[in-house]
Image (cartoon, rainbow, N blue to C red; front, side, top):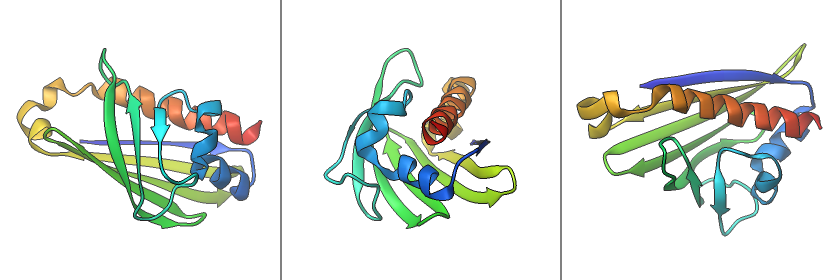
Length: 141
């Protein structure tokens, strides 16, 4: 299963990147990913963070590992939880209208193939859109 969304942000690449990668500021703008804990202030290659989000009625705690970062280009992180693996790619592109941020999350694993009908696809898509809208508001504000 793949969830892909994008948004255009009327700001500089530097502001969008700084807003996205500064974990210390996430509580100020991010309404989707809560209780972020990391040994690092910034997203960094090979590092991890723990957080909570709510795709179901109850919150899910996950550990996210930063797999790849190319400054001002993309960030890839992965998470695994009980038969479900997620690979989330964020791509940052400059355009005439601003900065386009593309979110592409791929879910795999036994939970997806065996009980994929239980995955709240609409809710996951809604959370992705909200996360991107939150980023837009923060970077433009």
